[in-house]
Length: 170
Image 1 (cartoon, rainbow, N blue to C red):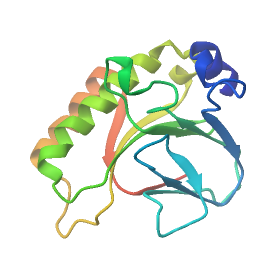
Image 2 (spheres, rainbow, N blue to C red; image 1 turned 90 degrees about the vertical axis):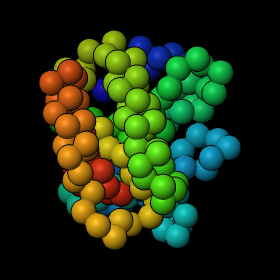
Image 3 (cartoon, rainbow, N blue to C red; image 1 turned 45 degrees about the horizontal axis):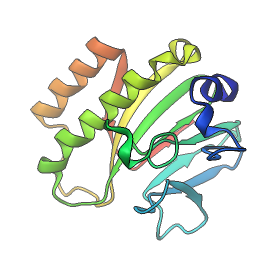
């Protein structure tokens, strides 16, 4: 998958922006650094998203915002993606407790990134997910009627499962 992503987006290669990292760690912590691309971190306190990899599979972390595309790209994009050979997950981190006003923007960022990544042929052979990650843990269930409608839209339009949460497992 790495070669396919680099072929579609040559700017992400090691000799350019180094947007892809490979890991087999059982726990992968990801931080949105705000002023730079998202990174894998060892600091649990600063992490915004967790990938549980209990079988130590080879996982690719792909920094998208401020790496494959910068702020001046002219389109919305999500923060990063994580993938193994079977699942490809696009993730948008929202570091706010004001969910209602930021959820619509997060969905647009995910949709535009999914569309832009449609040129990566290998994605068609994976289970695809789009995840809105909130830094703050909700005090009520997150499955609102609007979110359920959005999940149906994502599936019908892109064959991508739309989720909310701060972690995923491979």
